[in-house]
Length: 258
Ligand SMILES: [Zn+2]
Image (cartoon, rainbow, N blue to C red; front, side, top):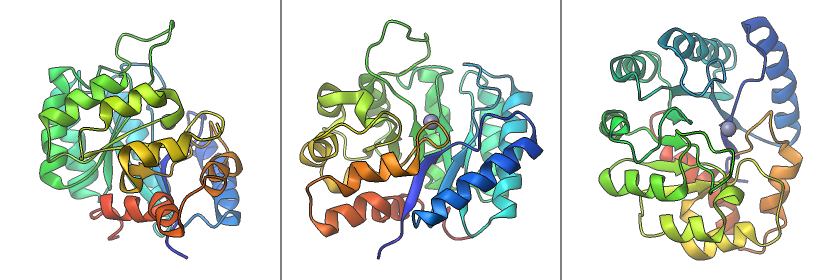
């Protein structure tokens, strides 16, 4: 069987390294039971929308500590806040270039269409590491910095060399998939949301299986529910292998090396 890679996971809700270690050890055991080979871990710092540089650094340090504890299982993603450009670029140098993290994570600090994301996207493209960008379709409690699929499409259009994975297929819906479809450097992950019949098939039809990536959003969603989305979807074995790990392995050229 091809490699099984969880492209979208968080270490846990705990705010201290010991708590995260315990939570992550349990998550790893469950992932192992389901045959997951690699977990891409990203911190959301202190879970505030626009975290301080100190909180971002601390979160990335915890991911590095977990990665160093399980180097065969974990690929670190460097979380940055594009509103703090100098710090964001310094964190990418520190975490990706010096410490071998495999990607960059962007959440809700500012929208993907905001020009402040450009330096981060530019550097990630130069380094050849993918960007995992949170997105959600229109919702009433939207935070000002939360991207919609159209925002991520705008980022992909401005940075055709950047490899971008938009999070949350179910939250994008058919409309969101149509908005990102024209940009071949833009992928979607299936993380978060409960399984909905036909969603993964729809993504494959609109984007091609090469642009659909398995991710769970652990600990927010379970491995069982998320793997079920792919196992139950009608597709070829080749398409299934691409979604479960083939595409992630291609995107993680830099991150799987160590
Ligand atoms: Zn997430």
